[in-house]
Image (cartoon, rainbow, N blue to C red; front, side, top):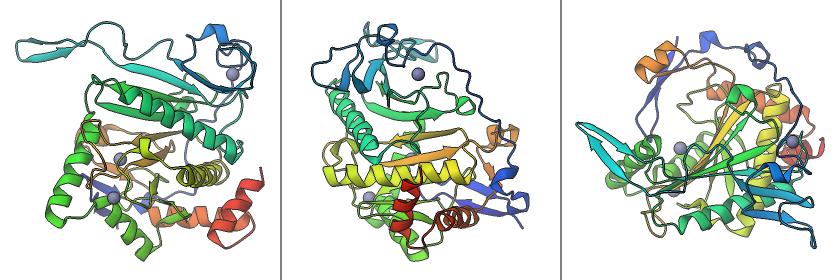
Length: 351
Ligand SMILES: [Zn+2]
Ligand SMILES: [Zn+2]
Ligand SMILES: [Zn+2]
């Protein structure tokens, strides 16, 4: 029988309809075709992007030339623009605002074909440092209220360029999805004087059947009220409200857990398209906000959002997170070991 489950942060109900359960190979996902052709993000084509705002590159190499292993550039076709004023206006009952914001692209590797599953953990650490550097920098602009870091991998997930990249958008407003989380987490805190995400971590550790893997600083689990099959979160174990405050040991642990999770998605789900986003605390909050906890949400693109979802805000998830975790653990076991962290290391080594 299908089951309704309620998200403890925003109160959204999802339908876990396991009668519709499928093996991962049975999802009708589009096979990702590599289309090749000219790539503005490949080394040698630096002039086809706007000038870089950050790069990690070999000594004695020049800005906007080869020699980099990671570059951040403004988006050539930005969703929002930094030029011009931030102006609000009204037209009767309707509100408008100039399309103000900052839109950057982090080109993650000079290699056109490398995904997280192929990168060394040391390289993923560099990516995390670069994201942090840009988040710290963009936060200095007092007109901005929020930064969204996200990745679209594969055309099904909305990526228009194949070359591995992550996007950073700084916004003059706090997006609705984040506001819902903030308000839900705030209410929970008012009532219980505890962070809902910290409580979720304790509960997941106690239940243990939704944990994919963990290390000293991070835990990865499939949320109780998952909207999508194999939806996976990565959450710092220590209460931290700003991603910008990430410490060296956390960067090391985050990169290794990301490497494991993205390798599992590639191996266990037959390399689907996916999105991930980092939910961070808005800039208005100062210091360590006790009720909000930054986290990463990863959504493999295995199903499509359809009429019922659009019409109701309910999601129908054909795979229970507990079953999905079992599958991922099998994939890890097949990779050779039973101990969680060692399995992760082993899995990281097979590529
Ligand atoms: Zn490329
Ligand atoms: Zn917390
Ligand atoms: Zn979130």
